[in-house]
Length: 159
Image (cartoon, rainbow, N blue to C red; front, top):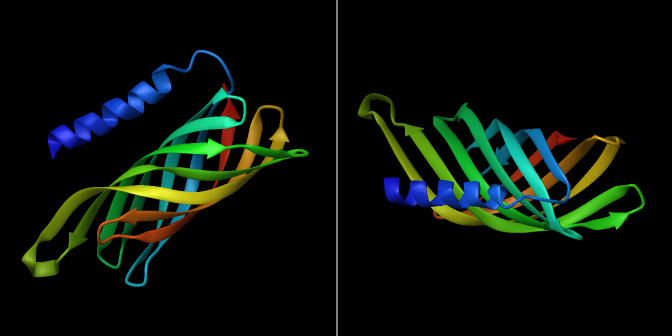
């Protein structure tokens, strides 16, 4: 498992290291993950890099607070196709996720696991100023035993 996590982290680092030109943004998100058996809020951070006109790579990580005896974290590598509509930007997204879960089993202890999966969704961005944008995003995370939609809202800042 450590080798899988190491490989995923190296992929994420490599994705951001090739950023030499184009628009780069860093941001923070508030997230809400929904599942029929559990729902939890989370906080996250992201780095985005537009490597070709209308194409952007995003590396993001989130921590979801414990609720209903379940806490989670995820690391994501997503690709966005940017559709500019006046001052708004709309984007479909697709990517990969590594989702870690911890379930508190009460007197029986706890169980932790991590699984790879993929993301599909869309988002919209609103510029607040030339260096700040607000985004709202919805995606579905397909992960073995932990499939769920996640919505997020956040701010990103130009570097």
